[in-house]
Length: 288
Image 1 (cartoon, helix red, strand yellow):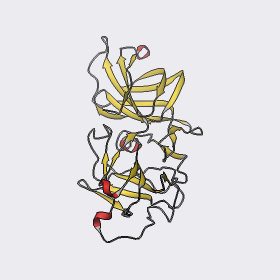
Image 2 (tube, helix red, strand yellow):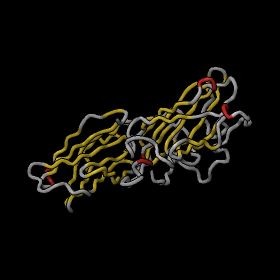
Image 3 (tube, rainbow, N blue to C red):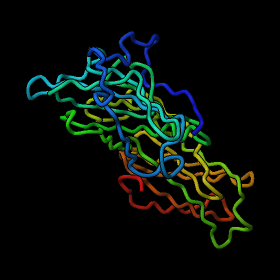
């Protein structure tokens, strides 16, 4: 995966506490927390994490039977960074177990410097998703409750928090020629920033965000995808623009983009750009 910078409500300067652990470092290596990230389904590679991928980790210790609230700093682990080298994950700084203690662990992808807020963290999708921007727009989140040292490795079951739109171009009966190997698809009139609560995973469209244009990622001729912030378009608006052989096809529609759901839109192209037909399929949770 290409490394592309991304902003996740970053502070102007990274907190001095970012990634720090409160406990003294024990000597036993088996006292280190080990993590096994699990993907919910497809990503840019449609398969797995790639070398250079990284995600952030927070851990809070229980106070009796109740976990401490997640805070910007002062947690057991504060935005520690896990990096994949293609074979294994390295967490920096290491997160150590505490004997007889329980923890809640929160993780998110892609990694970003220390945020200014954890309950109202602003995440923006890339407006150009034709290359690595597609993968780095795929905000994922995981939480594991009540883990203990005796439980062994910690499995992080990541979930997609945004919405995905797959666009398939289909030749109509009077469409002449073949679909070109390279064409362009743009998503119009959607807000491109979201607010997420990192402790609960709840997400919503940024109420102060503005609508923008997203260039979709192309998989092959006539097949495109884009990651979109969950939102409701309750009025008919220009939603998708398709540029094929210097001809612009404009699709207008209402649409509800649900969190964690993969939507499909089939666009039937005709000889007349003003007479495109769309077929919107049902959403799929889990992105498989």
